[in-house]
Length: 434
Image 1 (tube, one colour):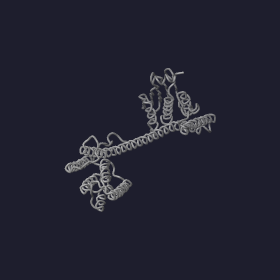
Image 2 (cartoon, one colour; image 1 turned 180 degrees about the vertical axis):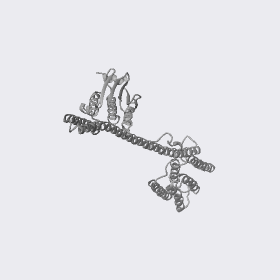
Image 3 (cartoon, one colour; image 1 turned 90 degrees about the vertical axis):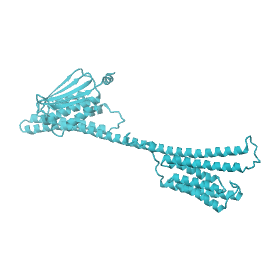
């Protein structure tokens, strides 16, 4: 995703070179202007209506026309060179008094426009156009002086202004509008191209940002699923393994105890399957649909299931004491689920690694937070054994809520896991509102 550091300086932006299709269009335009100019010359010469009163041979006029129009085929590739060539040939053709003056003006207009729209160096584009326009007005001044030196009669003049003054004003105003229009529309085309480039870059940045956000959301969802699967599978499989081992050891001597252990294995397996089905149901469900009460219960165990979790862990041979402190109150489902998963993972670590005899699960309802604490009297390093995914998962779960997490050996032996989850007052008021 783009940042302020790699954002280009748009005041120094250069228009990309024309593509193959644009170059082909320039060639076609030059040929069209050439053919039109040649046709105009034939008509003017056939009528004898020469722009300057007389003209050289038609063949020479056609050569001047070709020299004026053919450079337009390169107007976007070399706009400043084309403008200089067309400007010089334009004045030379008028010195030779070719028959038509309209189509050469069209070629000059296109050259000035192209220099403004396509020149990559904006300083050179500005000063080259200004130099050509100044040269054209100087040539106009020469023509007006020539006109004033050799007065022309105006037999049909009937306006309120002097014919000579009217002619001068007409020529100056017309040429001024002509050159300003070519200059203005050339700059306008360049600014429009730069605006499109900015929009394209913004769109690319937005697309890249959306793709990055989507990838981040996918990774976050994968991590969440991995945490849930780890918590569900690790806890229940640990309990089943311990009970199955106990049943194997007493199968030949105490069938009643073995049956009880196998019954615990069966119940634990059913609970694990129920929770896994809930998780799979969340994955398969339409995110726009509202979950039903049964789905919520299966996919999102909460504080109400903590006593049952403690009872299930007792079946694994660990004496678990459960206690609640403070005034119980409703908490957000996400907080309740996180508290349950932290207790589940902590008890799983105790069963698998700590070799403890007793464990305490305490839930404290504080003013602005919910605290879950699990302690044991084991060796004090069980939770740090193994892969470490359990503690990592707990830290990630707590971090999502902006809570605090603590885990480590206790001074008097055993291990401590404590998590504090914020429960803002606004959330409590909303949850307890009738």
